[in-house]
Structures are given as C-alpha cells and as structure tokens.
Length: 112
Length: 116
Image (cartoon, rainbow over all chains, first blue to last red; front, side, top):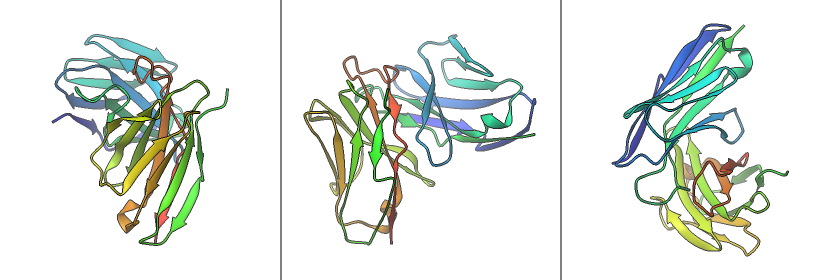
C-alpha cells in the first residue's frame, strides 16, 4: 500500500537553529514527491517537487533532498515566519497525478 | 491572477442535513481535486474532476459526491451529514493537461464545515 510517513510530528526550534524534517515513502513507482507548507486556516502552499534520487531544490532557507526511500526538508537559520505545518505528498502509482497521498505533516514552531 | 476561491469559508450544519461546497479554479485550469482534512486523518483525497468528468476517486462513502461545470467550477455535496464529516474541505486546481501537480497545483483556503 502506498504510504507517506513524516517525522517528527512536531518540532520546536530557536531562531537560527537549523534542523531537518523527514518524509519517508513507500510507493510502487515514484512519480514525484511534493513538499507543501500550510499555515493555520489556509490551504497548503506548494514548495517543491522532486523526481529522482539525488535531486535537490532550494528556496530561501529551505532545501529539499530526495533518496530512494525518503526526502528531507532542511531548514537553515529559521525565522519565526517559517513556523507552519510542512506536508509531503506523493501521487500513488496508479490513479493519476492529480491525486496525492499526504503525510500527517510536521508542525514547526520557530521562537525568537 | 486570482487564486482558487472556495465558498463559503465557514459552515455549520446539523446532523442529517446536506451541504454543497463550491470551488472556482484559477482561470485556465481544467482539473479540480477535492480533499478532506481532519486532525485525525490528515489530508485525504476525495475526487478529481477534469472537463466535467470524474477522473479519480478516493475511498469515501457515496454520501460524498461532486460535479464540475463547463466553466471548470466545481461543487461537492455531502448528504446525510454525520458528526465525523466535520473537517476542512480543500480544493486544488491545476492545468490538468499533462496531469502533473506541479503544473500549477494550487489549493484554495478551504471551507471549514462543522456538523453539530
């Protein structure tokens, strides 16, 4: 069964304290892994798509990496405005690209 | 450009009633997907519509249904509401032509449904 597991469930960081979020996946054939950010009361906001092991993408303080079994979202020198829930998702092997299986998310809190 | 618009933002309904939620996709987007988000189950896929046809379906009971109009706007309907249907309902739109989510797969802010 296609599955996405994220850890930790919650993470508290001091401003400037770098860390990584993990997303492990089991899917018959990976057709992309997606990272989203979700603020309270809002819909998920697209961050990155990764397609193959070894691929990396960066955006400001965020860098996403992908291996054959998991993805990491590295946050360098975070600021309070990076506080949000970070979600990763994969499309199932069958069922089209516009159907995503989401992990439960990591709630990140960055304190000044 | 305007984003994905969902109406209403908040809704309170009584058990047994039915509800209709609306989603207007980004102009030019032909695919609309619906998700249910709850604290216990997270984000779960409901269904996807493309060119007025249901293209994908998640594992939800038949009380959950949807449709898409010729202008790509979509509605979802939940009949005989149960307490467990309380959730944030999100829709996402994309171009749909190549079916890849990163081709503008954009979420709306959702409709918060509370069933009492």
